Amino acid sequence: MSVEENLQFMYNKKHLSVFCIKGLEDVYFMEGGTGLTENLDVRSAVKETLPTIFGYIGIGLAFGMVGKAAGFSTGVIFLMSAVIYAGSAQFVTVGMLASQSPVLSIIFSTFLINSRMILMGMALAPYFKKESMFRNMVTGTLLTDESFVLGMNKLQYTDHRLSFSWFHTVNFLSYATWVLSSAAGAVIGGFWGDPRSAGLDFAVTAMFIGLLYLQVMSDRSKAPCLQYLLVGMTLILTYTGMFFVPPGLLVLYVTLTGCGIGMVMRRVFF
Amino acid sequence: MYSFEDVLLTIAGCGLVTWLSRTAPFFLLKKLSLPKAAVEYISFVPVVILSALWFSSWFHGEPGHLPEPDIENMAASLPAAVSAVLSKNLLVTVITGIVSMAVVRWVLG
Image (cartoon, rainbow over all chains, first blue to last red; front, top):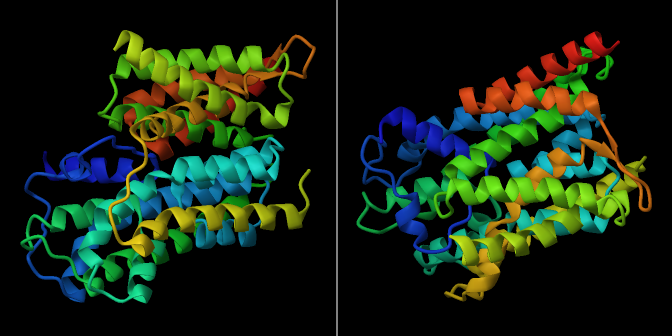
């Protein structure tokens, strides 16, 4: 992969909930051109995080603007980024709040989307076994798709060692960038005026369309054909679901049913 | 419409479940593995939930009634989807979608 492809790959990881069935380390490994060194100090961490920072800024700004267009205040948008700190789940939360989904179904959806963090944490935790409980908690709390990718790649240069100071620097810079850029996006979005007149209320849906395509592209564990078929099935499920499922529970109903259908389709046809 | 308290409750709940997913493996500090079937089921969540959120904007329905198509959202979705495929860029897709919706509303009056 070229540096640009690597960046695109890392960028995609941010908001795409990428799940890997097996061999996390293999899937996330990037070949050459990463600029990673064998040093595990703060200085090299700052240098090595920079390429991913631009990804956070772009999506953070977009999240702030989308949140504003959906009718949320800058304070609420700031809180979402500071407390939830999960790209795609935050977009889904905004979308579901706007469509009046019940609070519990929003929280459950967030859990489903972010449950991939459990897999990443399991791959990473062994490298921090000797660190204190507190440091382990801090490392897990600020873990992201990108910092995980970066950490997994760093292992290839450091003789399979990671340090708290290196990883925490990567994590902390990512967190600060994410929170600040989403707040900045919200402020910028505030200058837009009435969202509906300019078509701004469509921003959230357009974001889902973009996320969906990037998700299909980046999930290498499934054939694109299977994924597009599943998208079609979801359309049918959504339409037919409207006949008997209350509007607020529709997304949850479609998700729980659609995932089951996806599993069946994969086993039968792929 | 949700009250401010509901929104805060949602943020707190979403934050808590995300934090638990992030830290649990570090607390347990050992390789525990989810059943393979559960991992596979979860792996379909992003594609399905994003499609569901997209398509639910295409219709307005209530139980017992025929869903009504939302022509505006359907029409604006096409340019947004095309720009997603061509640009592979979120910001470009969002801006294309916004402009498309403005044009659609202008054309449909």
